Structure formats: C-alpha cells, structure tokens
Image 1 (cartoon, helix red, strand yellow):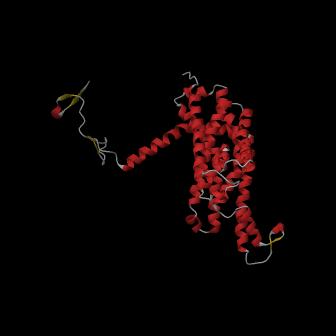
Image 2 (cartoon, helix red, strand yellow):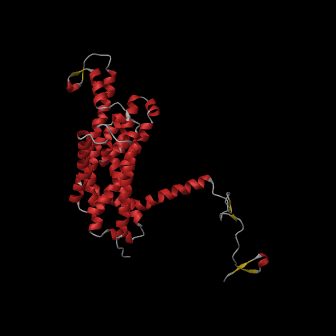
Image 3 (cartoon, rainbow, N blue to C red):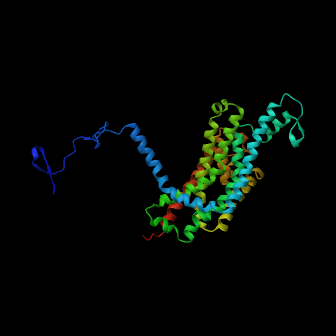
Length: 347
C-alpha cells in the first residue's frame, strides 16, 4: 500500500508532486491554464453568470411553494380576471384604432352594433383621450390602471406568503434546511415579483408587440426604447413593492392589519398629497409621500415622456422620487434582515 511501479518495474513510493506551473485536464485537454494567468473572458463571463444565477436557483423551490399556495386561492384568479379585462380593453382598442385608420378617407361607416361612426372622430377619441396610439403614454396608463389590481392581490397575499410563516413558526422549518436567510427572502421576493409582472410588465410588452405588428416593423426599430422603458418601469415596481410587502407582512403578519396598512400607504397618502399640493398649494415635493405616485414619475422617466404630461401637475423631479423609493426600499431591507436574524433555528 502506498507504492506504485516506477520505470523498470521498481517500486516507487507515492509522494506529493509540487506545482509545476501548469494544470492539465486528466484527458489531456487542449487549453492548459498557465499558473497565475488570468482566466479568459468566456470563463470570466461564465463564472459571473453562475454567481448571479446560483442564488435564484437555490431560492426557486421556496418561490415555487409560495406561488402554489397563492394559485390555489380563488381570490387571486378573481382579481387576475379583472386585471385581464383591462388588458383586453387596451388590446382590442388598438385593433379598433388600426381599423379606424383604414377608414379615414370615407364618411360615416357602419361599425356593427355600434351603428354608424365617423372614423376621424373615432381615431381622435382613441388616440387623444385614451392614448391608444402606441406611445409611451399608452403603456404608462396601462400600468397605472393595472396597479390597482396589483395592490389588491399583494394586500391579500402578503400575510399568506410570509406572515403565516412567522405567525405559525414555520419559517424555522425553512431555515433549518441548508438554506440561508438570503435564500428565504429571495424566494419570497421572487414569488411577489411573479405576481407583479404577470399583471404589469408582461401584458404591457404584449401590447407593445401587438401595436408593432399592426403598425409596421419600423415601429420596433424607431420605438424600441419603449420596450426597455417598460422593463425599467416593471423593475421599479417589482423592487419597491416587493420589499414594502415583505416588510409590512413580516411586521403585521395578519391579513386585516396588512390591508389597512396598504390602504394607508397607497390611498390615504395619495389623498393627503393631493390635498396638500393641489388644494393648499404646498410644494410639489409633498407628493413624495405617495409611494405609488413616485413609481409613476420614475416610470415616465423610463418611457422618456415629457414630465409636464404627468397628471396631476406639478410633480417632483424623477431623481427626487428615486431617492425616496431607494430610501424606503433600503429601510425595508434592513428591517427584513434584522427580523429574520431574530428567528430561532433548531437543527
């Protein structure tokens, strides 16, 4: 034991061979790595992707379990059906817009059960009043209206996602496994992010693609920045609302107090900001107490819209809204870390 046959059949003790400056694969690979040489760019990129993706992969089982819990609730599908009605309104509204433009050279035309309509007036109504013209205002308005449904879903789902884990001490079951606190929070955050983007970002991108197919292929090239703006708006909503929901659900745990808190944050604060700025003529920065309005301001910036088109007016600057949302998100994250660290784990 501990011997091997050397040259000439003589026994030779196995011993540690010092580093020789090269590391070759066992199969005699074609790309030896010189000792001390930096890794190639593809390897660095692959390592970076692995570092980013690995936490999400580890957290996905927690997210999948949370999603399954919500998807089994009838209220989610009821609210989601209402959200899809708004999507269908924009979806078929863009079809009507495309049809009306083909009839501009004619007089009044018959539109099925709607009777006879004037195409020019119809186009002006759809493009002017409803903003169904494929511009940034179309997607900003769509996400704004869908936001009400998002608030309802998150208010009802918050206690189920994380509040019950703390209330019934089931969070210790998760953390007793080879899962870190970061993986737990990330898994719950992924579940919330799925809800938000199912109602806002993905339908808005579908409307963008639909309008491009109805208009022309040049629309995707000329207005491609709108797709990036939709993603930026969706990311703002996802990060902000996810952290606020997890923090409030961790602190309150039960559904009724959570609903009351969300009503205060997104309804009372909005009414208060309107009263202070529009009625009492206070500075526009008082609108920053309304978190949802701050996300709307940043969404307009992502879609490269004129700040003067935001209603009600005046509005604070987008960077002021970004600072407020950043501060709120950071505070929620710190609270979550401290709260999760306080959980006793029995292994």
